[in-house]
Length: 564
Image (tube, rainbow, N blue to C red; front, side):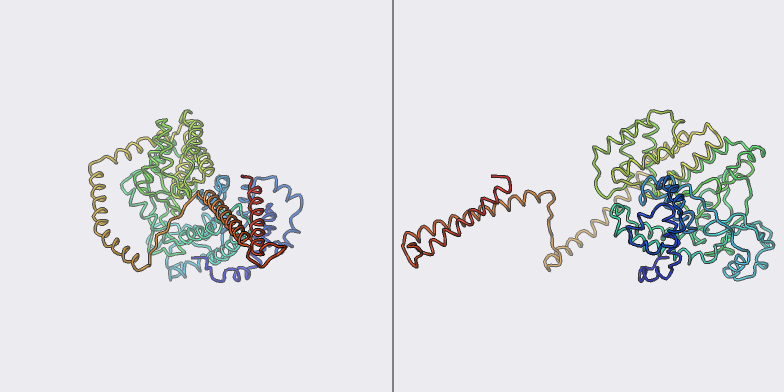
């Protein structure tokens, strides 16, 4: 992992210049109130003087989510990548930030070819000239993690080579250490964001980034995707050259083509945009509903069109996967929506979402009904999945519910494809394209082979349970006999009643004590036993006095409670 928890704070302060830079940017974009609450403003004196009052006023006129996006862009690769990843995680951040963080641009200046050469030769253990016949020094593209160059192998194949930025792992590690320290301070001093658990966000980001920065994982994703579509003539997946690939270098076939967003070039080349939109939708829907393994970032820069309207994907660093149950639940959700079935849609949504506390079913169903009224009776062509998704996230967050990360990424990927389809063909309708896939996945549940397989699986689970249950029960009894296991019962909602019963029983006991004192003192007075005080037995007077004090105390407590 990038983050090592031991000694994190001491190491963080060794990077004080970077720390000051991060805090200065936060202050610049109007987060001075947060810095004050974290008690770390002393590290900002220089940065605060550099930000003019006019600039601060201009920044404060923007929304909080806009300022967060702009700050992340200015802070560099780690923060830009974090924003992009968080834009796919409604379970980690508030819904109003999702759309804004999706706008983050992953574009940075390229690094020099001398460093490219050094990394390739260190990773592939050979000079660049021995590995490649030609290698273009000017990169095709540069991003936060690495940059891409065209080249030709000694065997004659044209390839693209993705090379990781020098020192990027160290840069990410430093930024994550500082982020984790800030997250710990936020959890300690800013109670209202505790629900989102900032330290959990940083650790989850580190886990995801650890995979994305390893190019061998991207190579495996590419090869798996190629296997799924090996027989599809409308899809092309570039070949990975494993012998020329490592954690920091990825070599793939150069496929060429026209970027899908370059509509004018597509028209000049004679491509049929409606066919491209239709095939792109079928490709995305097949990934989701048939394979459960899909491209998590299908934006226009990652999709090229080859002759014959063949679709070619690039950049398999971010992939998603959903199991069969999640696919079937999502199919039920879409089917209920297409069929205008409000009850079915609500039921499917509740099966998909996650929660920490049981939701208020009545209030949730009422809000789902209102949500359905917004979209259910509109023409399907007038509805955009992106708008539906954002409104759905708002609805769920109001009830403390959240979409699982992969389900959200799946829907978000489909909205990207919908946007590309509408760009190519204004009459494109993704929901209509989805209906045949929905029908197939629903019909698959009732195939004899599927039913028999599930029955066999259930039978196997029951047999396993019946084998282990007696042994487990004997172990439990043994632990109970040895005192190693105790069973406790916890009541909920009875605290008030128990308190009142305790108070009433205490008053009754107190009254009995007072009565006993009065009766005992009366008997002593009647026996006329000394010593005496003012001609009366001293013990009797003492008993009456104590009983009187206790009685007054009891009456006062009753009047204070407001209940006689």
